[in-house]
Structure formats: C-alpha cells, structure tokens
Image (cartoon, rainbow, N blue to C red; front, side, top):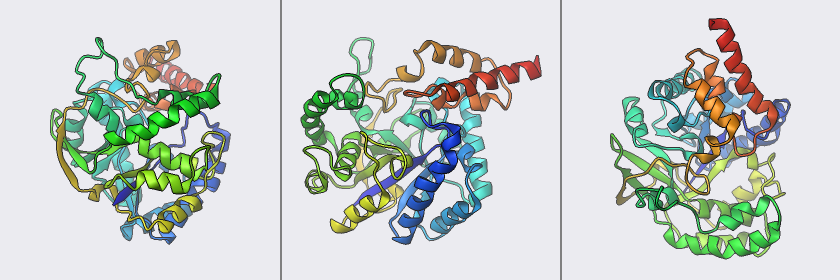
Length: 360
C-alpha cells in the first residue's frame, strides 16, 4: 500500500503572482479533477491563504472528492509560515486561521497536518493536539538523523546531496550521475508505516521519504539511467510508504530537472503496476517511536535556508516584533524560500512596513 499527498501553495517562492491563474489552470484543475475521476485517493495540502484564490468550480471539485473519501484534506499554516521560526502565539494563530478557513469552505476539520517545508520542533505536536490533530507528516531521513542529538558537534545531511545540487551551479550532469547511485542506495533506510513521535505531546508521524519521492519523479520524467520500469523495480521493494509527497505544481506547470510531468503519467504508472493507493492517514503503524529534532526537509535537515540569509534574518527579526494581520503575509516562508524571486520577498517587507505605518 502507498499514499500520495500533493502540496499546493500559491505563494510559491519562484512563481510570479501574475502566473497564479496559469498555475491553477495548468496544474491544479486538471490534476485534482483527473485524480478524482480515476478514484485515486490522495491527501491535498493547500494553505488557507491559497484557498481564497481558487475558482468556485475547483472548490466544488475538491468538496466532491472529500465527500467521496477520495481527497483527504490536511491542515497546515495559513500563509505557509515556517512554524519553528515563529514564537508560540504566532504558531498557534497560523494553525488556527488555516483550520477556520477549511471548516468554512470545505465543512471539515482535518486530522492530519503538513508543516510547511516539513519544518518541525518538539512543541509543535502539543499545539496540534490542542486543535485535535492526530497525525503529522515528517521527513523520514530527519527521523533517522535525529539520533544525533547535538548538531553543533556533527551536522545532519543526506548521502545523495550531489543529486540535490544537480539542478544548480556547475557540473549538473556530473552531480546527477554521482548522486544517483547514492540515492538508490539510500532506499535501504526506508521503513514502512507510521511512527509514534515523542514530542511535548505524543502524535503519530507519517514519514515522507525523499529517496522514494525523487526516484518516482525521475522515473516519470524518464531521466538518464532511470525510467518508469526501473523506478518501480526499486520502489516496489518498499511497502506502506508515501509514494509522492511534494508540490502539486510539478504536475502540469513547474519543471523538475527541466522536464514538466503530467498527472496522466502518474495515473498510468499506478494502474500499470497495479499499485494500491490509500489515504495517507490509513497507512499502518510501524511500531517504532522517535524523538524528532527541530528540523526540516532541506538537504542538511536544518532551518538555515530560511534563517541565515541577511534578508531572512531581517524578516524574522521584524515579524517577531509585530502583531497585526499583515504580519501573516510577512511570515510566508516563500518570501524567504529556496530561491525566491524579488517580488515574493518584497511582498513580505511591504507587509511589515504597512503594518508598522498603520499602527505607529
């Protein structure tokens, strides 16, 4: 059995706001509609802010999928904020506002939670339990690497980092070919099922395994030394895991390694290999328990991407000291992002300035 989750955020760091309608038209509408029509169960993680930008027909399509138990709606933070970078009152506000919108628009209260960028700290489960959340998606490798309790002594990081770098900088082909064997080798660490997380309050964790996710995407995109048949030979050896767990935009709009996938390729992959897809919340327990460190699904499992750039330091400093409604937009992680466009970053600075002026 395998699970699918698609993450949808219309404040995407690398996508201009002028492209939002095209993202919805090319990716969101056809992908969600075809998955529902083919009765392939999946979890949909969409931010409360993004919901306000969706057309009515898509809202109705999502509601139909929820009513027929094909779509499992998840909770997240309202504006895709990195929750461990916020003080606790702001964490709670982001979670609460997202939940309120989903209750209002979809008439349901999600029980599973997707933390943006899978960024986690041990207090987060306690706040989620206060809102009756039962399960949270987590990075599988971060679980395993959390046995290293002091990263000041030894940093966390993945073996196939060269492959992560393959889409950036010099020698992309060299990085790809050197990273691929390590990516495949890393499948040996993948274990099936959900886990018990030993946070401030216990909660069930649903691991998202990046090696599984990346191998599927390489297979669907027919990258060198990888195609759909080889991808399934590798992935068919792991059971009761998330088969896909990243951005919905990669289907129909956003290129992955220079290639744009379409949802039909995933649907045919599932049907051709007779893969049983279930809702992520129905994955069985593994019987394992973990303490998960403050972490994310970044290559080094840290929060540095969203914290250490000088603009990001300034944004984090200012948002900690402001309280108004517009601060929620400044807390959006994609203003910090992996490689944000200036428009997205300036949106955060503008929100802070406007809030300051209005309340001075």
